[in-house]
Amino acid sequence: MELSAISIEMPDGVNVIVGQAHFIKAVEDLHEALAGASPQLRFGVAFCEASGPCLIRRSGNADDLVEFAARYAEAIGAGHSFIVFLRDGYPVNVLNAIKQVPEVCTVYCATANPIEVLVAQTDLGRGIVGVVDGMPPAGIETPDDEADRKKLLREIGYKL
Image (cartoon, rainbow, N blue to C red; front, side, top):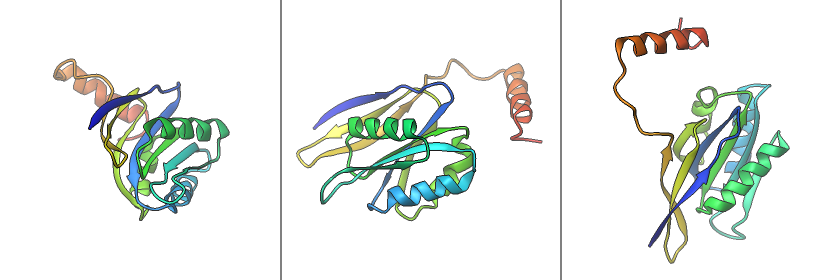
């Protein structure tokens, strides 16, 4: 078995969700879940089919994000994996809808950070074994850090 790390650099204003699903219909159902989440959300989704023609299936409402998703899905190349790129919205707004898609088995990450997708290669194929999301902790928050966190969440409307 060989392990590799596929780096995914995030453009400004874009978030990524990486997961695993189990059926070709996933790409259409993910599209519908994302489109129904918000009318201003722009997204691209790609799904690596793991049987039959083994194609990278893609969809979305922003051509650049669809191409971005297809390119990174090809680089990851893990059967039944999917990748979603979002603009004008956040994973927190769509994650539950994605997890409710019947074909979705696992969500590995949802972030705006640069990530590395850890991929194992065997004789059978490739699979995602995990995701490295962002940087390691710089320390434990202080009372001032806690106050800043709470203030930020209220400023951006996630807490009252």
